[in-house]
Length: 162
Length: 193
Image 1 (tube, rainbow over the protein chains, first blue to last red):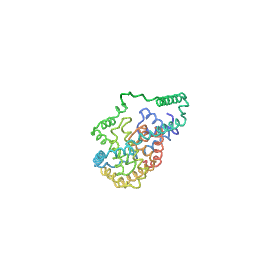
Image 2 (cartoon, chains in turn blue, cyan):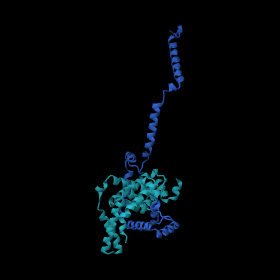
Image 3 (cartoon, rainbow over the protein chains, first blue to last red):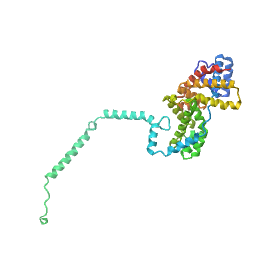
């Protein structure tokens, strides 16, 4: 085995060796190397010391009423008004990195696209002059029909109806 | 992700919680109450705050049961919430306000341990000095390095899980761990022998 000292993988191998997560073959290989390499041996000894020092740090027991307190909070939580639940979802989401955060860049891109399109989008009549012509034609037709109505004399009523 | 759910019993339990099975929630609580409280204790080094934060972790897990999807291992998700709460607490500078006597708690821990083995006063003092150094060494680490070391050493999470919990890449986690252990080696290596 080549000496991993000075290479990126040194710490990874070292950590894995001390955590006993190397495969048996890798462990055997690394142990052969350790016998020949003073630098690696020193590092492993120091890391093992850290490992055992950390193992000695045992926190105290959890309070006996932990569960009771938790279930009381859950019960209180479930009777909270709906508006509080909504506010909580917005401001204190259960997951650390709320979904709305990932939606922000998407929203920003959409907004930029919308602004860009609004600025660059030419008037539709420029693109399609015939549309404007059609519009004018329709207006003309309507005007003509109105004129026609005005000009048309009212129908004569039958004499007997008076 | 069906594959994840089939591999992860805890995720299966959480899926049952989603379906309204409160017994499954009780099982998850039983399984992870200790690890979460201890992780938070080592993070914030304050016993009452660690329990308070752990309550918040489980409360958030319960609240989000309806929208839970087993897209990752349950422990990854759980420690992600715990890490987030601890980092927020540390960032908000609440440490000074709520600092309870950690030494008092630590001595309690020592008392509890040493009563079983009946050590001499000298051994007891030596142990306390050693643990005090360990706590200080951990406390001296930057918050993310501390979280990475605690998840790696005590919770035995994989690099990928720690990366998800800390919302960074696996290579960033390795870098955090290497630097953290380097600091710890320089602070604690003298304990040899």
